[in-house]
Image 1 (tube, rainbow, N blue to C red):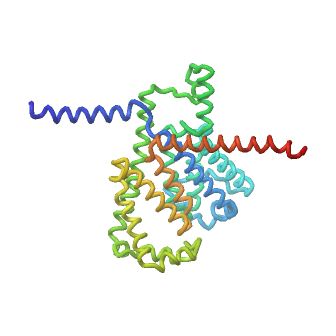
Image 2 (tube, rainbow, N blue to C red):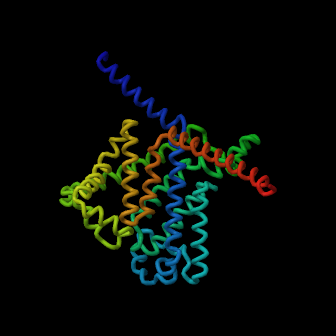
Image 3 (cartoon, rainbow, N blue to C red):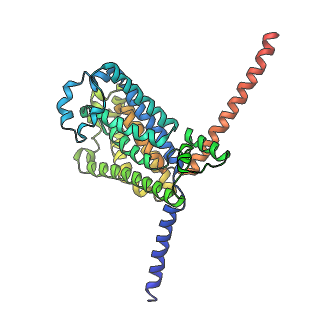
Length: 348
């Protein structure tokens, strides 16, 4: 028994730490707030950039995609969108854009996210041919954000909660819900939040690891030439001269190819230590910026960066928040000084 005691103590210590992590408080609230804002911008970007072709792609002019809709795994969900009138379809489209804005600013966040997920899924499934992985990861991530507390910071909901608490926390479930205050016990709310956070992190882990393992099986990736072929296509040539600069240099092309594989392959183990975590997060963000610029996939990249943000520590977000607040304060002071000098110079 004496030999088993240290092992049992170690197991008990690990169990206590896991329970404490899940039950004591909500984790990564800054990171999830960042994710809410950035993925909301990504979805809004998808809607805005496709506004001019909305009828042909998804609306009354998309009859050519009827067979694709009939095979959708989401059944008749796409029927939520009206195609009987172009005006009515446009009104629904603009309303969904407004919901995306509501998610970005954090107004009735959970309800807004649910409506956005349903609306975007129904819209994309009207023509699965034009969807991409950016749509998928945005929808999956938004589902987890609807369960977690993603409006703790930088949101209208957070401001409403502060005002309600300053006026005296209301009692009653409906009144607390109206004020955006929690109605679940603290430990239960923290557990639900942290489970959703863990599920979102696991989704990111699976995505990167599966992508890396798929790549390392290919001879082109092993040889360091895989990026040559997509970057040579004019469809991806947002800046053709930049793509040509990359693919015309064998050393840079090989380094970029291996960089993409290694970043995804070692992203998960790199998160274990704070120093390697910083490197991994910066590297994966750099990779997605490269995808956005070189391959013309800004909304996919922005969606991925949004969920990579959960791996940035709250301390870093607080420092950035303090830095931005100080810059804004100095800018206001400078503006006030210019305004105060303006009348004097005018009268002189």
